[in-house]
Amino acid sequence: MNTLEKDLSGHSMRIGIVQSRFNPAIGDSLRNACIAELHKLGVADADITLGTVPGALEAPLLLLKMAKSRHFDALIALGAVIRGETYHFEIVANESARGIIEVQLDTGVPIANAILTTENDEQALARAVIKGAEAAHVAIEMANLIRHL
Image (cartoon, rainbow, N blue to C red; front, side, top):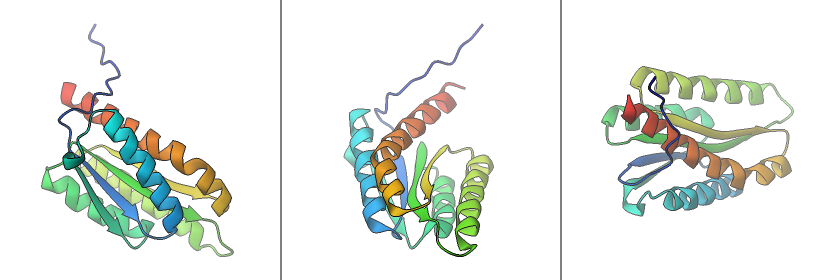
């Protein structure tokens, strides 16, 4: 039996990051933790490309362009959708996630989705560092799995 083992070596990997500029303190915390973890996993700074978009709904389009470029082994989506008083939260949370999944499945390029969906800013800030680092792990692990297939 062949077993695909967990591999978190990011050496020679090219990673694209798309960050939403809405909720900038949370996005910046996610980005800083993610990039720090990518470096720990062996990804060179020169192999990380960061693009920013106005909000979570715009992330799938830039992710699609990056994935279709074939310049990246994996992609990472960063941002935060905070519940408000209207139904808009559900639309943004659901549709951004759906778009990210569609890009991943349509292109075969793995995408770590770290667009947080929380009730308030405090919850998002509490999760940002952990989720940013986790996104780096997911991207590298999935890229390595795909390389081994």
